[in-house]
Image (cartoon, rainbow, N blue to C red; front, side, top):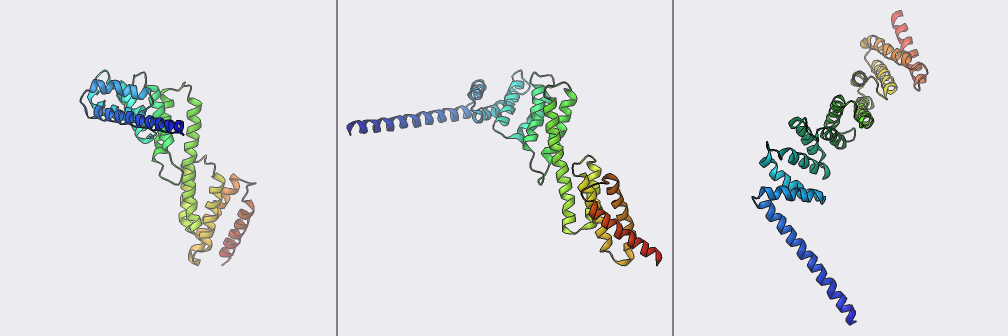
Length: 274
């Protein structure tokens, strides 16, 4: 029992020491942040970075960034400040500063890596297709600029794979937005939006679906129109139906397309006989 009590007391003392060291350490860092010794902050920022304490390094780099701007040390400070943002996963901010770094120091030893990581940050910040795609567009633009400047980069295949993924996201969003009009029964808007989607992305993986729903929207829009408007709208539907058949003569929607084509022909034939 006595031995158990001693062990228990030892644990308590050890925990108190750990807490005390932590308090002193935090107090020392707080004092460092509040101080005006920028050379010490510069040194400690890199020490924290090497220890992978990126949150603390980030705070110090942020303080000394304006101090060393325009000086020899400024290049290194900006690069490591940006790397800290990247490593704490603040990708949008990191992307911005990687771009700024390349603009400020285009011939730096860190320039190529910064240009790639800037694009990669926007890739990591790119959301699912249903959300705003600002970061997706920025990532595409930055990857294309990177490949243009460094055409022989060993990261070429990686960049192209990421570009394909980003473009698919834009194609998906475009198709989903247009298809939503169809689902809601806004057939005229659906027809226009689907055509615009294919115009924007002629190599879309949804091309067959787009052509089908373009034709289907035109057909339903004509079918549900008042009598005076039907002839003109069935003529338009006939054109969209033909576009699908020409592109996919053995397509997965051919059965329904043929049905719409026959109904459209019957109506136009009937109309001409009146």
